[in-house]
Length: 207
Image (cartoon, rainbow, N blue to C red; front, side, top):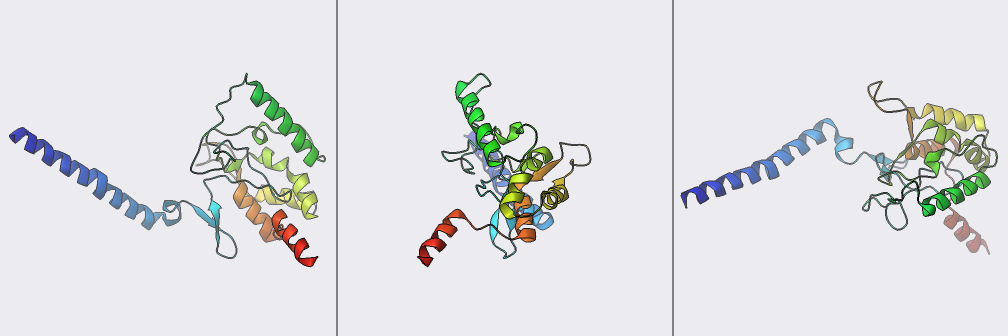
């Protein structure tokens, strides 16, 4: 009985310290020193509305926006509550057929692009929520975005270059472009692209 009481006391103290006090202290320190990151690195537009997180990729279907890597997270992809990959291996016929179809679709949508379609634009990441593209993956999309927005490719290319993030601490990782931040920069410089659904509603209201 004496040993049981000691064990229960140790368990109770451990639960309070590691399960309550430590998390609260660390959360408080994080919110004080790194408030935005502690709250999920949320991103707001010019109106102050939250449009996503720097850390979670999301889909952009409109031609006037840069598109992220494909996603296998959830039934429709880009589901932040269901992170995961497709688990299809390099010998998978299903994966090969999907990639072939995606390459053909991307080339059709972006006929002015030069060179091969970057592999990252037709393959999903392990999480399905990768928020970044390589500079090459973003640059390949420049002709499509420029054409859809009616601006020169050079202006869009300069915007991509201005949004390239360098290696962490100068040597960790690779240069990258955050797709959400890049698309917000597009809207600030060239104006927002009206969604397809909004266009249809506008057309119906004028009939």
